[in-house]
Image (cartoon, rainbow, N blue to C red; front, side):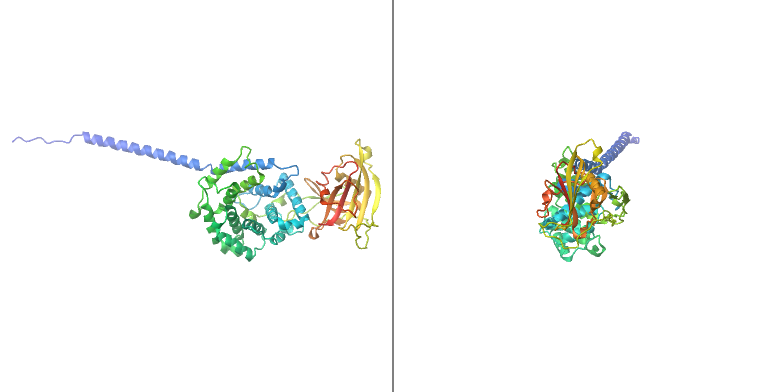
Length: 508
């Protein structure tokens, strides 16, 4: 039987196996390359979240500045806008606020004037605690103490008027906490009730309650309340819609502030980038939201590096105190700088010496309305400076009243160039009579007169100098109403022939 030669395996399968290995390796390499490219693309797509927010913020801020009026304010929303602009200019990691530029200082002074007018109509303060709370928050953000606003405790007034709605209550409690005021147990219980029943409240109320609690737990006495913040935060995070919003613009902006510190918590996660994208889609080409100052300011707060709950933690050793203090001005033009306050109340001025005066005052009791006052002094003075002026001269009367019942009167009739500022008339009067000497603070937006004829304003007792522009000479028997209060400061008023000006030192 013939022997078969050994059968050797064909080399074809090994070559085919080698080619298959090479194809698999090639596919793996291509797959790895595609994975890297996809990962880089995904990483790049997640990166623009913050720049997009910054772009939205910058456009909204630019629009708000474009809406500022000639008085350097925003009508009824000055405090809202100032608060938003201030927080938008803060750093996320630094509690020291930057110095305030001149434009912000001008708007801050306008806000102070608005608060003074609100104090003047102090009967209305009980009906506007929310507005007072926003003023207090803005003052705190600007490193000014609302508990010592020219001798008046705004926070004390605020705590005497507890609003009926939970949202307004939470806002007023936040203002008090931001001023480091004591939060009462009754207020704490109401805040905790809001937190426990978050599902029964709207987005705005829950968000404001969360921010108020976050402010309160910064006080070492209330650190044990930290765990009460988590439940309403998780509940609020779950209310985010598929489009990224929390409903309306205002609610979305408030929710973004409230959830700022739960962004990295797994059980309270929410889509910040989705909320930003929704806000970007709602922003108008001019940068506003619905062309509304209030809503645009709220959105700016929602996108700002710091939320309302962080106002309390601001380190106001710097801030407004870095800017030049106001100047103390006498009628002779001498200026004495006032020392800047090292604390929050950097707007408080130091006690200034009164100008010398030779005015004689009666020791009798204030006269009753309608009777002639024996201390009235009247003279006619012609302006020596106006004689060299090429402008037309006009006559105006300038009167000082002292006391709510007017127990002292001084009067001058002056000739001055038409359209002269009333401040110029005051300087002229002070040169002619010591009864009209005055002291004022010089601010970038003009002079604030605080002392006339030796009488200095006393905010603690609500004694202020009020300027009136009248169509006829003032008579104590018929005192002028509030509608005649001068619409601007002494630098903004320009005289016309036959006008009558009255500075009245009275209790508001």
